Each structure stands twice: as C-alpha cells, then as structure tokens.
Image 1 (cartoon, one colour):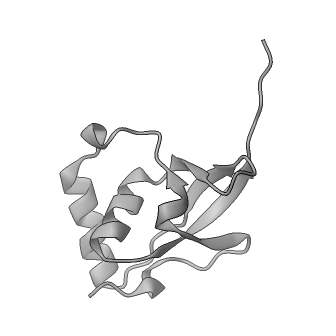
Image 2 (cartoon, rainbow, N blue to C red):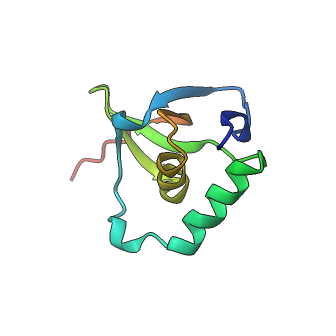
Length: 93
C-alpha cells in the first residue's frame, strides 16, 4: 500500500487525475530502477516532490518533470497526483 501522504504539500500544488496527464517522455526511456525506488519510497511514506506540468487550457496537463513519479504513482494505484502548474509558453517563429 502506498500512502498519498508521501507527496509533499506545497503551496501552489493541485491534485490532478493521472488520466489528465500527457507524458512527453516515451515509456521506453523510463528507468525501471528509478520507478521502483519511487514506489519503495511511496510505500515507506517518504516525502516526494510534486511533478511539474504545463497547462494549455485544454484540460490535459503536459508533464515537464516527474515522468518516473507518474509511473510510480500508477503502480501504487493512485488516481491523482500533486502537480505544480506552469503556464504553457508559446514561441513564434
């Protein structure tokens, strides 16, 4: 069992459903050892930082930092994950 309290409560964080996340890092690049370490830490109720995402207003959040934490959260059967939301930057060419 992984307690949700493993995630640090920081000002400016929001709980977002895992289903509302868009991962930019292919699963192929996830390190199984890193995911396993996060799962172990979550089971021990160690503090885990929120992930960082961008919001383009569509209701889907793009993960910037925290791909391994997202995978570990899924393995712990979490339905939501704490995030820090950044505005999406739009660049013009």
